[in-house]
Structure formats: C-alpha cells, structure tokens
Length: 435
Ligand SMILES: [Zn+2]
Image (tube, rainbow, N blue to C red):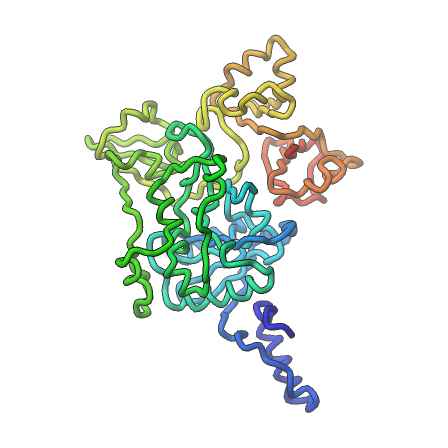
C-alpha cells in the first residue's frame, strides 16, 4: 500500500491490518503507513455529498478560514457542502465532501485565466480567522493533510492557494471593473513563514490574472500581503509561538469596521455592502441596512458597519442583478445584452432572452430599463424544458450537472446543476447552461 492512500484508512482498516499481521505469519512485513495515525479524520459528510458530481480534474488546493467559531462554522459548511475538509482547532479533520467530488467553496473565482476554480480544486476550511495564526494542532493536521493530498493529486506547492488569491468580484459601484480583493479569506496561508511551517516550499509569486489585465487590484494591502516574498520581521515573531488553544492575532493589513478616509463600505463589507443583512450605524445613531442606502458617495465618516454572519455565496452565483450589480442591462451584459445568449429573469417570473426582447416592440423597453431585481445570465444557452423523453443530459450534454448550469423549477426555484437529482426533476423545468 502506498503511503499516499493513508488518508482513506479507516480505523477498521487498521484493525484489519493488525489482525492480518497477527494471524498470517507470511504477512508480517505489511508496511503500516507511517502517518496513518497522525491525522484524526472523522466523517461528517454533507447531505449534498451524494449529489455532487466528480471534479473534471484537480490542480489546486484552496485554503480558507471559517471566520467564525468552530461548531457553527462546521454546521454551515456541512449543510451547504462548502469544503472537502475542515481542520478544527484541536487538529481533528472532518471530511465533508468526498475528495474526488465537487465542493462549493471558492464562489466567483479565477486563477491563471481559469474561472470557476471549484471544478479544479480541493477546498480546505481551517477554523479560524484570515488575520490570526492557527493553533499548533492545526499546523500538524494541515501539514499532514496537505502532504497526502499533494502526493495523491500531484499538486505543486505554488498551486496551494488561498481563497483570497482566487476570488474576484464583478464591477459594482465602487469598482468599475472585475477585481481582486473580493475576499480576504485564508490570507494567512500566503505568509511565507506560515507556509514554511506547513511544509510548503514555494508560493505563487504573482497574480497572472492581474498581470494579464483580466482583473484589477481592488485591495492593495491584501495584494501586497499575498505576494510578499518575505514576511516582515514582526510577522516572523508571531509564527512558531508556543501552542495555545485560541489563536492569536498576526500582523496583517489593518482592518476597521468604521467608514473613514481609507475604508469605504466596500472595504468593510465587500460584496455585501448593499445587502439587507449589512447594517450601517451612522454617527448620529441612525441605522440603515445596505439595501436602504441610496447615496454611497455620501456615507459619513464614523459610520459603523455591522455584518451579519450570513454567507454570501449562495445560491445565485453566476447571476447578475439589476439594482445590485448595475442599473441597466447593458452595464451588466455588455454588447451581448440583446443577444439570445443573455437571459433575463424578471421579478414577476417571466423569462426571456435578449433576442426575444429585441424582437417584440412591446418588450424592447426592458432592454434599456429592466426592473430592479431582474436577474441576468450572460453567455448562456436556453435549453428549453426537461421532459420525460428529454432528459438534462440530452439537453446540456456533459454540462448537465455542472455547477454553472441552472435549472428553474415550475415553482420558480432555481437549482444549480451540481445540486440536481436527475431522477426527480419536475416536468416543465427549464435548463440554462453556459455556451
Ligand atoms: Zn473562503
């Protein structure tokens, strides 16, 4: 048995091997994997695990920080199938999605020109915060988990990335172009000294998507932190500290929850700046939620931003929304706004392609002015209805269960391809898949 399979050894396997060792004299040389008991793996499979498709291939490992306490974070990750593994404070590792299947952890992401990084990566959540060091037990567990996965999938150290490296945001009121800086998640794993402790000898030296002009840098501090060749001296001191149960802060870019010269609402809340779950408390004590704010240019300094614990990646990843991502279809869909590959989901339930809207005089007005809340898919093919004799695979081909494929049920619910159960799609469900 090769040692790279040790991660899959259950306790029962080890017992079996021990029994074989005792009973069969000829098998006395069975090599017991050296690292088998260094990793305490526990199954905590997501209810979505069964439905998740296999990943086409595996090139990256993406490291995340939960940004919340252990049990609550774990419950949410399990519920939504948001990682393959979660490394707890004690060093216990929970297995959430089968390692060969797709976990939804990176959201809107791009690296080296490839987008939708979930399809090419293993996602590991580490209980903790992006700007705090992890516990010694987590260092031990994560080092071993990475060692096994690297060898299993033949992943190089430079391809072990942080969520903050690969996440990107679409244009919004604060940034006119697609940009890096959507998340700071997992950024401590970019620190050279942290990586060294994890047995990683190298890291990405630059951001190829920024270099090629595909993305702009929206968070300079984060960017220089991620690609710093050497940690500052003060940073070195923090790592290698004695074991503590609770992680301590590391020297990371400064953060604030108060709007000021350096911090806009976007800096603090990122893509949730205009979300109803984000609350702004003005210096005069007045409170407004993100969706109630009209003038972002006139946010008074001293306004405090309170984020709720709710996640931001579900379930309309891939959709653009009028009133949120921009005000006019052309801003969102660009030159293709009136083409058949741009699909409009109106708040009243009506669905039309850009080409259909253009053809009908009575509907043309929606191309220049779509109602707030209209969701738009760009670069999609409208695949029509699922029927008993017209199954998803015959409509969308291999893409039928891609996360980027959307099914709209007759009741208006929208489900991603990777969450769909092909045997129970109601008749009349519509399919939309990427060109
Ligand atoms: Zn993350």
